[in-house]
Length: 94
Image 1 (tube, rainbow, N blue to C red):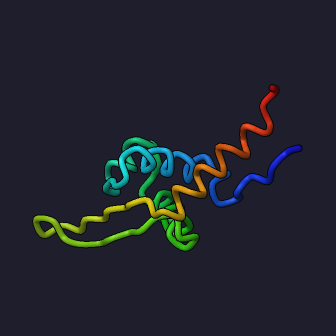
Image 2 (image 1 turned 180 degrees about the horizontal axis):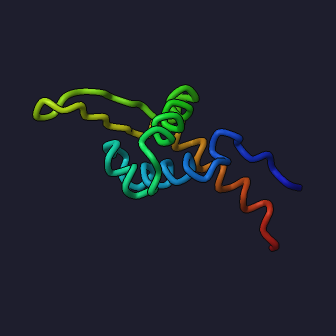
């Protein structure tokens, strides 16, 4: 009856990041930080967990001599997000 929820996505901040990336496909660190209202440290940790799961890619570069981090959702991340949303639906009344 109830489907298992992906523990990687069952975190408010990680789910927020994935929700942003599902529509944008790619966003930089500062944008994600502002939109999620998280601290840089917490966001870094959560992005690493999403990256380790293969749900996002993280590219670090320099832009105007400043570090620039860009995150993009992967096909695996899109599938995981879709599965998570479908699993959540199993908890809602019909």
